[in-house]
Amino acid sequence: MIAWLPITLVLALGGGVEDELDRLEGHQVERRADGSYRILDIAGRGAPLVGVVEMRGKALLLRTGDRAYRLRGPLAHPRMAGPGYKIWVIGKVRGPDLIAERLGVLAPPKR
Image (cartoon, rainbow, N blue to C red; front, top):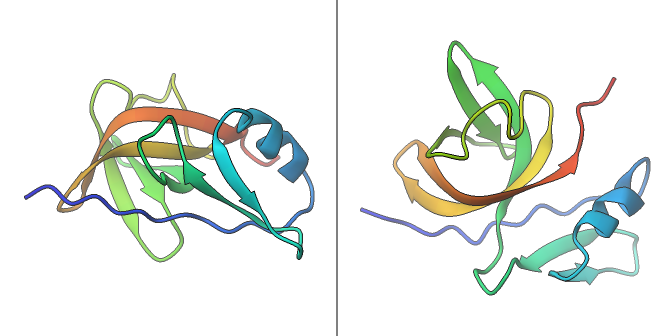
């Protein structure tokens, strides 16, 4: 069964958020009066899942707050976005897996 989850992450403005917004230029983003934003649409594909990449054993995961998805597909490699990177992903959710069809880096790992 394929499920599309239109989950967006709401972020408070602070260190690096302006850089994230710059990386989202050309995509549909709602900027709120409180300084937060959410991604509404990426290239006509809807809202992406947004989170931080983690490594668990040999598996790459996308942690979206309360849930983690195992990243699968040709884009799911550390050279594309390794552990600690904050990314958005468009893809298909199949159980615990997220088959990444498109992804973009929002922020590098925090140091």
